[in-house]
Amino acid sequence: MSLISCGNMALTVSTSTGSIPGHLDRCGNPDDTANYVLLLKTLRETFGASGSKFGLTFTTLTSYWYLRWFDLPKMLQYADRISVMTYDLHGSWNADNPIGNIVQGHTNLTEIKLAMELYWRVEIPPSKLVLGFGFYGRSFTLSDPSYNSPGCTFSGASNPGLCSATAGILAYYEIQELINQHKAQKKIEAISPIHDRDAAVKYFTFGKDQWVSYDDKDTFKQKVDWANSVGLGGAMIWASDLGEYTDTA
Image 1 (cartoon, rainbow, N blue to C red):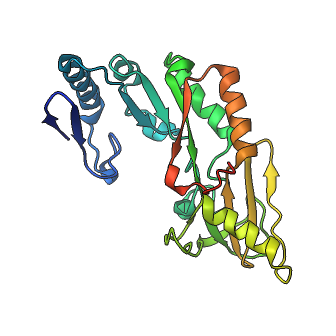
Image 2 (image 1 turned 45 degrees about the vertical axis):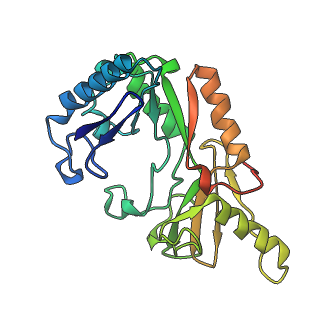
């Protein structure tokens, strides 16, 4: 990683694309734990010397497998908040997972609560944590369309969306277009999203063997209410350009 100075106004942080500390298969190395602390320290000192007031946050994940390489207490000495990616918990990459290639919501409030305990165990204050939302859904091709509930098997990623053009993912606006299209065309069987209230996520099947999970205004509210109840410091969204133009979420 490297720091490129841009005068007193900003810094650009350059890292290996998709790197995860400590994981050699994701461009990481064992020195990352100490280096990430040093990176934040250098950023904070540089921001302070600039005479401008900059906020500084860093982004982390929900899995102990990855979090064990982050020295969160030391990193937070130099940062204002930690943005936690509480989405992408499951996807088509789980095909080789020991628990099996099963469809699951890519976000799940029950799992999020367990993940936050990892932060609290190392005494990270809830007020320093930012809850992450995804303005998209993770999608699959079902092995058997007759079995379409969470826990049923998938054969691979879903077909690409018309605009997102990537297998296994649908933008929020693409999801809403699917629902509205089926409502408008009476010859097509209507889509009836299922609201898993415990997980605070919705899902539905379409095109016979396609399955997608996602958040909307109902599940966002569930998560926001929980975040407020435990005193989290805020929320973030990835990404605003994936949202529906009428802002239904």
